[in-house]
Image 1: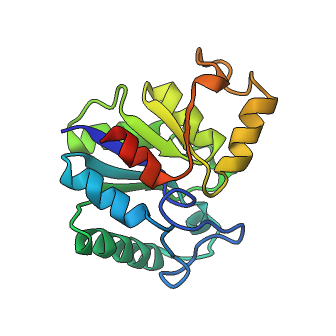
Image 2: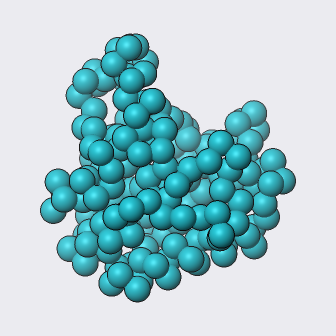
Length: 187
C-alpha cells in the first residue's frame, strides 16, 4: 500500500500563529477530511508528521494533543477513512532533536513503525521545513497553498536557491491549492 505523508497544521486543519492548543481550536480545512477519506479508501496509508512545539513551550499538554488527534481520527473515520499513524515532534526549535522538521527523525520513525519504505512517498506540507524534510529523506515534496503555503510558494519564487543543498529546483516542487486537489491528482 502506498503511503501519503501529511503535515498537520495548515494542511489538514487551520493553523494559528498562537498555536492550536485544544480540540475546540482544531478545525479542519474545507475538504481536507473528505480528501483524506478518499485517499484512504483508494488504498493509501495516511500518516501525519507534525512539529508540535506547543508541547515543549508548555502551551498544551499530551492529553490536549491526544484529544485533538482523537477528534481528527473520528472525523476521518466518520467519512470512511483510516489514519495509520500520527507522529509528532514535541520539542522546541532550539532543542536540537532529530525529529523536528526539517530534520528527518519522524520519517525514520514512520518507516520503522509501519515497516515501509518512504522513498518517493508524497509528503504534503505548507512550509519550507516540510519540503526540506521530504527532500532530505527522498520523499516527493508537495506544497499546498493553505496555511503558510502561499507565503512558502512566494519564497520559493523569490529565492530559487532556498532549497539548497537539495538537487531539486524550487520550480520543480508540485504546488496545489489544497489537500483535496493533491488527492484528486494522486487518484
